[in-house]
Image 1 (cartoon, rainbow, N blue to C red):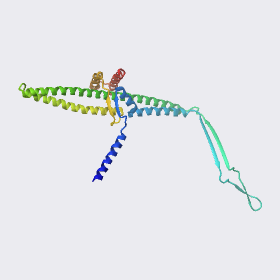
Image 2: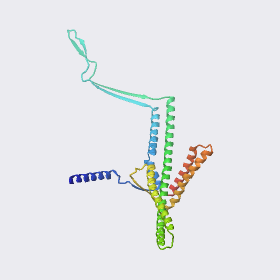
Image 3: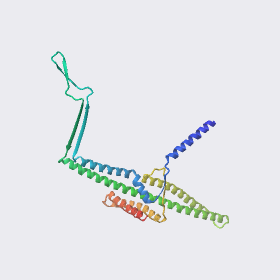
Image 4: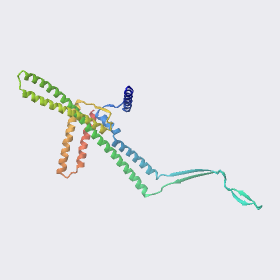
Length: 295
């Protein structure tokens, strides 16, 4: 029995050590908004893939242009006959005489030059490859803009939830003090019991709201990590500055207001939804850029 206990303990120690080795040492981050955006530019899959597409398009343009440039081809052949081929001729004496026209070692050198003078498909191919490069560059820019917007919204949501928890903590402390004072006064007969019950219900409601907001804060951090392309097991904290709180609340509120306005505009006008959405994203991006510059 003791041997089994030692074996289980040893296996647990090995498992803990292996898990500790898998977790990077630099997995704790305290980032500002601009740091989160820069991190997303380097690790978000959509941005990384778009950047690779741009590089691939650049190589494709060079490959297409190179196909019309002068082409020089060279070749070298070396041949070694282990047994030189021979031809037999009658020697007039009833026998044969061997004769060979081959050499044991044979070297061959070749050099060629090709130049494309004119080909319509080549011109079309070059133009098409350059267009493809421009589209890849625009897609890369669009990916960066989308990541910027998503990270900014997720960052603001974390700030809002953190500030809401701070306010709820202050409310809980204040309600707890009022509840204790009212309970003491009720025992002395100065207040009615219904006042104690009313404060108790209010206190429990605020505590439940605090717990829900705390869970929502954890989900907000997970969403921010997802938008940044950061592994879930990494520890992330944001640099919460008081002057950003009002901006964060306004940004989140304006997101919902602009969503409702967009639905109303699309419903009552002939303007298509993507155009309104592009204008909405442009406003959010402008606010995020301004905030980053102030920071």
